[in-house]
Structure formats: C-alpha cells, structure tokens
Image (cartoon, rainbow, N blue to C red; front, top):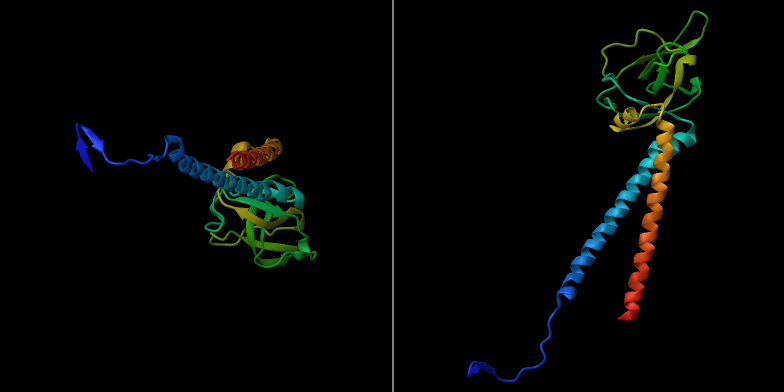
Length: 206
C-alpha cells in the first residue's frame, strides 16, 4: 500500500463492518438465555417448595411443626420443619419418629424416637421414647391418645420462617403463597409465548 499526496492509492472494495447494534445482539441473546434459565430454575424451586411445604401436607392431612430444641440433633436441629402424618397407633414400630403431646389434651408437643414399648397395669400399650441427642429415655410413657402422628418428612431451616409467620396466620400465608406461585407461573408462560412470537416475527422479516 502506497500513499500519494497524503492519500491512499490502490484499489479499494466495499468496506464491510459490524455495526454496534449487530455486535450487541450476541450479548443480548446471552443475557436473555441466562435470564430464561434463571426464571426456570426459580419457578422449579418455587413449585417444589409449594408441593413440599403446602400441597403435600394439606393433601395428606398432615400437621406441621418446628423443632425448637437440640434433643433430636444433629439429624433434626432447631429450625427443622416437620411434616407429621396421622397413623394408627398399632402401626408404629421401633425406630419411628413420632410427635406426641407432653400431656394428653394440651397443645405442647414433643418429637422423639420410639426406643421401646411398654404396657400399663390394665394392659394398655404405651411407647418408650427418647431424643436422639438425649442421654436417657423420656421419663413418662406415651399413650395412644397423646400421639399426633409419625414423621412423614423434614425440611431443614424452613421452620424458622414458619415460626416467623405464626401458626394463626399460616393458612392465610398458604393461600397467599399459592396465589403468588400461580401468578408467577402465568407470567413466565406469557413471557415465554411472547418471546417465541417475537422470534418468529423477526425470522419472517429477515
């Protein structure tokens, strides 16, 4: 390449370049893809949480409790959310984790493991229970009327949130959460459909 009188000499073809908008398209597409993936992940987590914390307990007639002490640590530390399903007293067996009233007819409950069986002088079957982290068995035997149910499953840490909401407001928050999940899912579906239509329109225009 030579220069004459301050100008370039030689043959020149058309100059092909990439405009700013063209170069930004891959970046925008990357962010859009990442955003879509994140939305899917959030939706899946939300649906799973709704099933585990709301739908399944309601559908199975289970009751929910929160571990407040270290008696069942380390497997069930404080803050663990327990879903306890009703069960026939005769179906309980050694090693089952059960939730029971400390005193029949009173609201205070405990969740411990069955470590044995006993009987009263009248022949009534009772449970011998113990916290996994306790050094000795519970002082009092557990009668059938005290048993609320057998542990169905447990979710770590979620109990702190349940306690913050309060037992009285739990039904209200359940409905709010369900409505929120339905609304969020509808928004995600609408955005996905709109995005697909936009891509189709852009493809036809090209």
